[in-house]
Length: 205
Image (cartoon, rainbow, N blue to C red):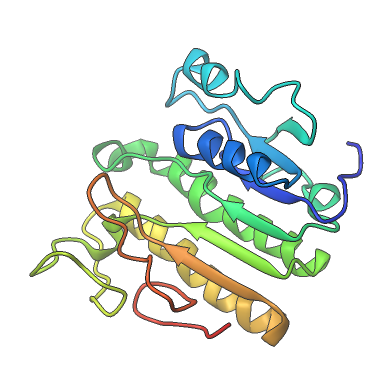
């Protein structure tokens, strides 16, 4: 695997709808983007390649097809100015039953392996896309970063576990590492306030 450029931004889940648009915005602002995606089967591959159609071949953009839970991503993280972690296995209903192994693999193990790499590479900034599912059946809406996290699906449990892993590794990295978790849904972005941290907690910049 070739060594990545210095001062680049790593975007995981870059072949998704949000990830590809984020990569386009970063390129438009002059950043170099190292894109990572595992091309899992829960989205049609044709849709992902369509999302990437305006990015492939553009100067400053490179795509790596790999599984963060099993591949060594450290060469891509070396010299990164930031990591934007959007990669995850989505879906509430399909997280029940035998498919849960896949959620553990993609949402928990992949995040833990990425965090290990970020600490090793001394990545200064990390943004993690979480999910409004970490709040479960909230008593009122919209939820805020102070709302109680009480997921009611295995999917929500894995996304909350990923947030808590970020908290643990932020402590390991010390003050030099700033991170943020943004909980997203089709209707609201509860994690978009000015604080740094996970839902229910904050880490100042």
